[in-house]
Image (cartoon, rainbow, N blue to C red; front, side):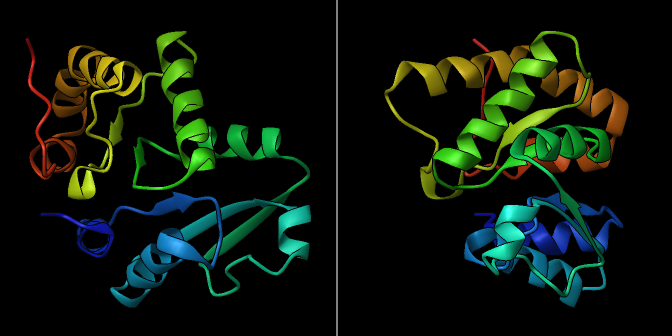
Length: 165
């Protein structure tokens, strides 16, 4: 099974930058530390009010400080080539849903995916399962075609593969 630590090594080994919310705490802090430890680049985007609360990762390759959460989302969308949500809380899921929705609305054509560590995103709840179906139909083929092996990593490494019906 691929966990956040393994995912970070895959990013670093393939020369893919981590663009994330810029925190030093939780799974994302561990992910950033691991990317950096394996020679990768980690770019954080964080609103000033959160930097002031001292949760910003000060050892990143780059930390962009923005004025608001809205500016953070716009900067993340601009900087990233794809969006992958690791297990997290409401904020993680909310930001992923925004990127997913922006893709559906045609505001970007970047692949979106959920890294389903220990079946975190697997449930009987309709919303997540419906999103997984939409992801499979709308993004996976395009991601593999446009990004090659790095996109296949996202598809093949899930602990619970998404299958088309």
